[in-house]
Image (cartoon, rainbow, N blue to C red; front, side):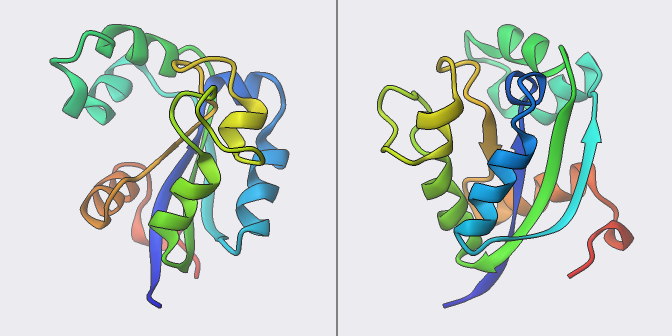
Length: 140
């Protein structure tokens, strides 16, 4: 198994409800290690750039408005097969479809306000990590 890094974000709906610690604990309990973290309040422009891949999708405006509505916690996670493990711990995008014990099943309030974001592939993880962190901010 490969040790890899992935990007994780705790979204404004979860930070608003003070769930940062509970969500981070679930990630750590799954064997993922936080090697970088910071709390940010992204601007609308940052949200538009970060989610640019979804620009043509009908939910883009709502997504970028929501993501710039309050603080988020951005993290770099490290561990064996970290990308797949993080996605497993997050659960399905729709909390109604998420497995019991996953972050989204326990904490999400809707498909849009689903508490967390995580990279879906190694390339995406590298891009998302570089968007929020400089190399000296990641301490393995």
